[in-house]
Image (cartoon, rainbow, N blue to C red):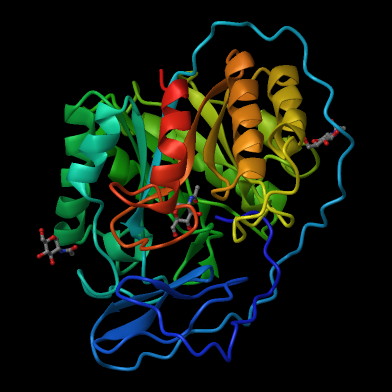
Length: 392
Ligand SMILES: *[C@@H]1O[C@H](CO)[C@@H](O)[C@H](O)[C@H]1NC(C)=O
Ligand SMILES: *[C@@H]1O[C@H](CO)[C@@H](O)[C@H](O)[C@H]1NC(C)=O
Ligand SMILES: *[C@@H]1O[C@H](CO)[C@@H](O)[C@H](O)[C@H]1NC(C)=O
């Protein structure tokens, strides 16, 4: 997450308390901000705080950063793109696995407290349903705690590798997602050589696994546009030079990699080149009013198509292939129609869209509005039967 976020204010004054693993804070969240006895409210990211076991009273980190608010001019109803090829299937449909990057800002943090790793049994459930791609988020600060070019923390690498190997041993793709927003310890990464070294080191670890996908970074934002281009190109060059030549690489864009603003923001990324020609442009799209993925309310039942159609046209005009690396909608009929339209659109344009990944699965999402974690996640019970229709 998330495309464009309004600076958030945590709701106060609600008497009830959140239960175990329930949400207790986050931008646009309006529920209880304290936890039942034995649990404490832990900041995970600007959009989500959660009641985790523990008695100490951790204070919520409030958001003080003003985020760029991409203004959403309501676009005219979408005219459909040309030549949808019926009967086509997406190459990928899958799920973001979010948990190893939790506890953003607390580094390295403690396993089981600030962060954990995805549940392989939940991933197995998804694989049984036909999903074939999982985006595994992690924190660069935990993998390389000292500098971008330093050696790996072996414990974190081992845990990450176990999840990746589990996924790929089942024949599914595992996307390595440094969930860093183009930043390292909060500072924008400007050293493209160091960034390349980081990717060279990661690529060497996974060079022999063709089902691993390298996602250069999650959601660059508020960065120099040429820097975003250069960081992506440095990652691509370094991954290939390190001997990882068979894998796909996902490149994300500025402005939270939003599909809806891609054709005005990230047009320079058309210049990215990959000697192996396995570069995929990864965009994200949420369907709430500000596109931030913090509300269960979708703008209207056609908003999925409206928000990505410009990106579809951009991909085709520039000879690129895209993947919708994050998408989601609330558990209600307006969003359901919008999500259906979105997936129909991706599938009909599968010459330029390789697939999509629901945001998000992971063991710690509790009653999060988009949780697709089996067996009882809000989106799992509401959306799984629909999404399954689009698996490859
Ligand atoms: C995946 O989950 C993480 C969890 O924090 C979130 O920040 C991220 O935006 C999600 N998806 C994408 C596509 O980044
Ligand atoms: C890795 O996972 C194990 C449990 O399987 C845990 O005990 C350990 O603390 C974890 N280490 C890191 C760095 O994540
Ligand atoms: C850019 O993309 C948006 C969102 O899909 C779309 O509404 C708009 O018409 C596109 N603009 C151009 C010039 O293609």
